[in-house]
Length: 409
Ligand SMILES: Cc1cc2nc3c(=O)[nH]c(=O)nc-3n(C[C@H](O)[C@H](O)[C@H](O)COP(=O)(O)OP(=O)(O)OC[C@H]3O[C@@H](n4cnc5c(N)ncnc54)[C@H](O)[C@@H]3O)c2cc1C
Image (cartoon, rainbow, N blue to C red; front, side, top):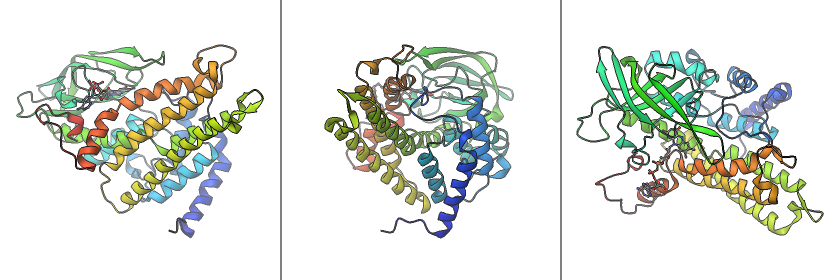
């Protein structure tokens, strides 16, 4: 098999390398130091870097110019080359997250012209941060059981109810939220609407929740008579389930990204080169070396799997359950990489806040705990396995009486 990309693409690679030479020093730090990788408001430096990448077409490359993007032709190989070169140079690939990676593709598929013009540009430039209002206390895996209501009043909807586990809601500017606009619809998948709203709207109360990392990354969000214009519905009113699943499809691609895996694997390899036991570097210890190589083999498998997805994309085919494999394996792999680092650090591996002996600003124990959340968020591993088993392997379906919504995607 010839895996070379051809002359045109090698010329493009050169262009990317030149950009890196000239501007690489402006990238925010993504190495093992600093509590990067969590959910936090992007720094000014990160937003400036993001704007530069958008302008040069190294992120959001294919977003049309009229919506604030670079307007490049869809070319997955160019996207791959950019990510290969940025990963090799240890540079930030730019922002991702619920706005850029999930809402923007959803709006491009299902949004109105006005919604695309208002929201896509500021979102890809990192100026408008979004949160995802899906889960509720009684609706997680069984998402379609959501109860937050939106009743009509003139040209507006009035929203009442509660969301939970809403990442970034404490600093987000906007939310895309699922609400029930037709409570008497014949099935729970009908009568749901997908609505965009500003987090400044009166009646929204955000209460941060602490995770096991000790930080507040997600929130409870309460809605009391929150007024939103009807024109903020994405797609058709009452047909939000379909739109919601478009977003979920992109969320699963986002969680378990092979580039992030490579970055973290390089960082742990560096750690094993500097940490020693009785004067021997851990990278030269057969047990740690063996663990590292096993993780590297899994990272390679993820990389080749992403190449397979790329081929699917080039052929304009819908990948189906292959994206779920990225989410399932990628999130577990990232946690296993962090676990190796925590073990390598010994007793220092449990420290991450303050302390003279802290390594890499405590990023590894933080990531170890943070990644457990990623295994759950965006549909738990059990749910991913159910779908892969039923749709991919053709195994019998679970009883449909109380069907789990994220399985009905
Ligand atoms: C870090 C983090 C960030 C999150 N961010 C957001 C966010 O920004 N916005 C948002 O809307 N939500 C968010 N969530 C919520 C997330 O989507 C839900 O936690 C997830 O869908 C699971 O729902 P649940 O917590 O209600 O658990 P439940 O659905 O109650 O599940 C409990 C357990 O039962 C298992 N289970 C449930 N049904 C089945 C089944 N049919 N077969 C086998 N096992 C099953 C689950 O796998 C799980 O282990 C986030 C969660 C986490 C952890």
